[in-house]
Length: 345
Image 1 (cartoon, rainbow, N blue to C red):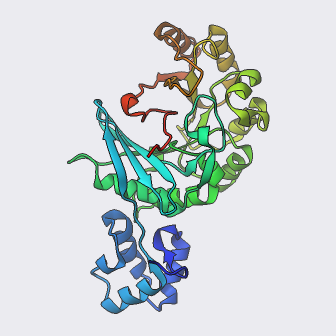
Image 2 (image 1 turned 135 degrees about the vertical axis):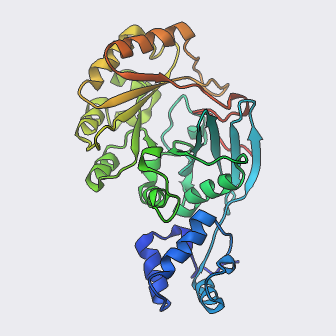
Image 3 (image 1 turned 90 degrees about the horizontal axis):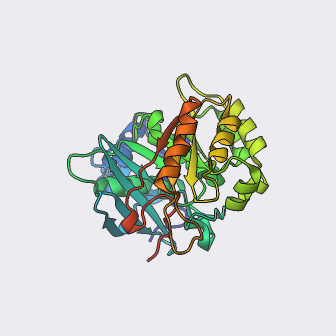
């Protein structure tokens, strides 16, 4: 049992970890040694940091510990998608999904237990928000899945679009992302880290000021306020006009774009007029569109758009010059696809 005075090393940012090591009277280079054990190697205990002296390990153990997550269940779909269920120390559950696709191996991770956003096509929000995840709980998903990945493979991409709204857990999410892209930790290219948000405007503006380097994705799902408010309650607080204005101002690095995710729902947002309106409202924003055919579930009242409607919707967008991809849903039979995560025991 860890003392309440001990800190989880994976909850510390770079400067905090540096200060902790300095407070023990240790040399600056010890920081890189500790980092190597925590993330590139992924040890489970301070005692495993074998190139540190026994005395240093004992001193470090008195003030800190190394947390981990163990999968409570791993399910695998026929297409190779794996869904990981984790039970947290307080009994809450979260899920992560590992998705193989040609040369890519993408890990979709959660940032909250549950979700408060209440999007009507998504199962995660049905039970509401339980709590934010700590930075260590976000990072430990990567480490746990890495230990259980297929042989001779590496995780290539991280997407923060599992359970929860990442920007509603701003501090912990950004702290975790800083380690994902750190060259002395996980070493993921910033182009291979994507954060998906329903569009929390104050937090997007904060991201802009902080000049973050990961990829930004906006869950849009409608081209007008009436439809979007019906699907996504957050639109009543942050309507499309204001959200898109923030996106137009968002500082993007050269050759990067904002991804707009659009779940296609039969008879709700999949008409040709919806497609034309989407083209209009995205004009002037460096963007690409991911079309996501709805993943149906008994607990949601909607149906997936027919293939012909999906094709015609995509054609309208592409003819206007918008890069548009229809995302293939994976892991459907194990409820691991977009909008299906609910962390059942």
